[in-house]
Image 1 (tube, rainbow, N blue to C red):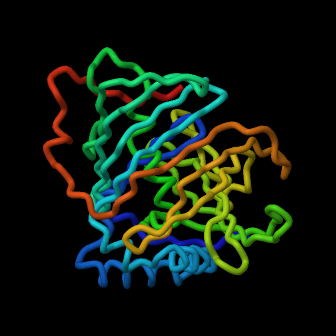
Image 2 (cartoon, rainbow, N blue to C red):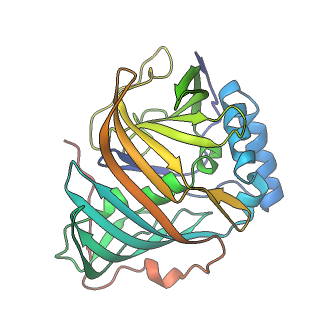
Length: 300
């Protein structure tokens, strides 16, 4: 069953995928201060059943006012993927208003072994770059805001341009959870066909897991009859919550293959640490160094 949140997109949206992950870079989240931004987002979410479920989750995680009062998001994001035999850690600082982000890449390797590295990458609002230029992985166009996006669910789903579809409850660890899918219109960003289905705990209303799909770099045509159905993908469990600066966020993620309603093998893992929502944002870190290269977007 679908219900549309069909507010026009008044800002430039760029969503980028990574492996089975998508990132969202939205220029601005509305005018005015935190109270005005929260009021605007709340009104938009209240227009649909799916939006109201997302709003319940946001309130359970700290609330719209707290989110819009946080100038930045900063943390170490460590990610391990068994399919690609990749593991890395970077420390990111994101401007929550503009969604521009810079990273210090700390480690890179395989799930079994990583080495320290000295590199940086960023999304400056228009381009993604990597320094030094001869470093190929991780792909900055994929990874610049991926960790930020997943760590910031459900808050980022209050952005303009997100639509929702509500599906029947489904059991997670033996407990029926409410489900709401977030999806996007064609032509929005690099991955308009991506979907995120939130599993909300019936009592706490927190996000317990997200079933996500990715269409980065692939041609996509939306269904004229409404949202896509729940798709196979990765069921990403949100675990070990902590509260920092008034916002309750996960510190551990575990992703499993998910097909036809059946959970499969472990696919990927992630960890967040050194979390702050008050770290100053250094604009100079967005300037591409002389030894850097721009990562283009390509369709396959």
